[in-house]
Length: 312
Length: 86
Image 1 (cartoon, rainbow over the protein chains, first blue to last red):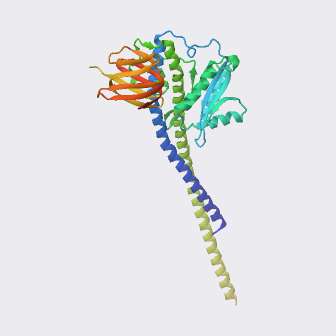
Image 2: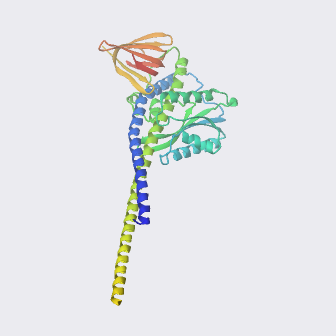
């Protein structure tokens, strides 16, 4: 076998083994999308119930809570970037970080200082590589977020929110994540988490992507009796509401991540197929050229022999 | 007789859904019993056990930890950070 043929055969082999890996990752991602979407669905009754309760308290009582009152001047804003831990997901991380950069630029142009919080290794690396300070980062659960992790993040954000700005606290909190619409449509977007703009359940439900039965009868709230008091109920509800918003963002982001990974791996598999095809063609051409050359050599040799024996 | 529609949800999953005659939950101020036709209530749930008497006269015990309880129009929602059937 000729040297050229050997080179092509080697390339085909290595592309085939890469293709196998891409295909496996594609299948794994595809099965995980379903799981992520199911988890997102499972969490929605809780967040719907919370949204409704928060709206009910806020709409009927004139309770002023630190989490809902707009500060007079906003000097520092926190941005929580919810990104992936691993790559191999196409432009998923890049699109998300672009959205985050856009938000940060917007906040800076309004004269606000930005404190960064990140979820996922990719977002963390992006900012540390550029020498930007990260207030706090969490890694290791971008694919399987849990309610506990969401609470941990919520607590850290609340703590920084309730700290005075002079002591390093923030006046408002934004969250940047990729909203999962369908496995082909995932939109990076940002949302203000705090101070809470308490809207009616319908709008809140729509923004968190829940279509639920509770929504339909949402508009009129009955006169609630509060146990023990409206303030205490609000005190208990709001942090949970924030945790649940963070959890739903994390879950949506994890579904988007898997969907992006599946799409990226599908493309990679297709490209590997194309490459294998091209290399097979080239290897065949090389083989034919070799055979042609061998034939020419044999015929030429025979001619030369015949000519020399005729000369005798 | 009217029945209560009960939803017990934890942060990441639904725990129990069904119809009940009576729900007894523990709030910060003490236990609260809810029958059909109860006035609307929003309460903070303290750590403890919630007992649900279903329409089939079965008692369901749920351990709910931190969360809230809302009652309106014979619809009871208990949303807890962590909840499990006992």
